[in-house]
Length: 137
Image 1 (spheres, helix red, strand yellow):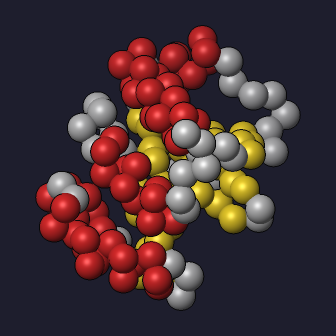
Image 2 (cartoon, rainbow, N blue to C red):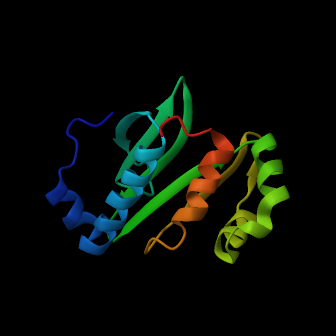
């Protein structure tokens, strides 16, 4: 957990105005589809902040922030990978490339995207639906 949660001004300074807009749009998209518990954490070695969506002890996804960069991570376990692979042609080439280049660990593939705009958001929602059915109308 973080001692202090970054405010809008700190986030804008960290990632820049265009990427902070992307961050906010992605959060809004997730929050209109899912009712989740959210927590701010330190982002580890590679990131300054992590903003994690969880419910019932399971992580849905996490957003990350560092200087001039935002990240969106989703972990696909074995069954979830099979669902993605069965439907992969319905994802953008970029998502397929990141999926293919991501190492598979014992607990799944940790897919990390660094969106610069909203073009992959439809794919992000499809990936999230593999993990969990939306619980908001």
